[in-house]
Amino acid sequence: MSVWDQPAGLGQCSSRRDDDGWLRRQWGEGACLDAAGGSLVAGLDFEPTSGRFDPGRCYLVGDRPSGRALFVRHVEPNADLTPLRRELDAVPDERVAELFAAVALVNWHDSAGYCANCGGPTVPESAGRSRRCAGCGQQTFPRLDPAAIVAVTDDDDRLLLGRQPSWGPGRMSVLAGFVEAGESPEQAARREVLEEVGVELGQVAYFGSQPWPFPRSLMLAFTATARSVSLDLDGQEIEQADWFSRRELAGLVDGGAVILPSRHSVARRLIEAWRDEG
Ligand SMILES: [Zn+2]
Image (cartoon, rainbow, N blue to C red; front, side, top):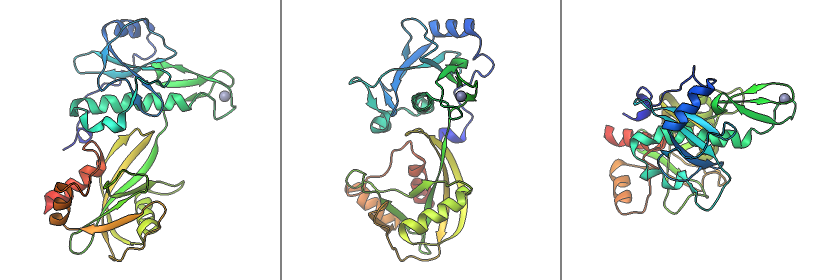
């Protein structure tokens, strides 16, 4: 069971976001992480706050069960920051939701400086949980891009894995793609697999979900059965794909020939759920 299937450990502080006195007191006793757009972070944990509270660039991430508030400070990209995605496997389980929330907020602010309605400049409000246009007054909230990700198995219960050209050597994963306008995630899963490897899906079943703030995806995961096993790669999004038995995949992973996705990804959870069924 992943953290995403359990009640959130991070409170949203929904009723306190506009309480300036409360926010400043929380800042004094809270913890903060510096981050920049592109999911760049100054470390893998929140440190005790220092300096003054700047509502223009210090955003409330939430509070821990202990009551300690967490903030993220939006900074310019600099050499002290590292991509969270690269360090992801080093993040402790109890920190992953907090870090994902922090970079998701900063990624959104980084791209939301101008109003989609009138083009005017926008400013953060409500502890950085929304922005408001200085021109037309329109309020905007953090945006998500839904993506479907699907573990496809054949009649012999082999798992379909593919790789994108941009990935590091040996990296293989289940297939995924963004949900198009007017499409359900289940339809997106069917379309992506057909487009990328030429396989038609039979039954598609919901598996689970999680945020994936690189930069702003919401992953909706499915399992599916294949109607055929012949692969016809599109050569663009997927450069290599194959069916793997549990024994084959375990051998390739042990030998280092195949590298699986981060342990904090739903892709990995899909692969491990299939592995554990065998
Ligand atoms: Zn506007």
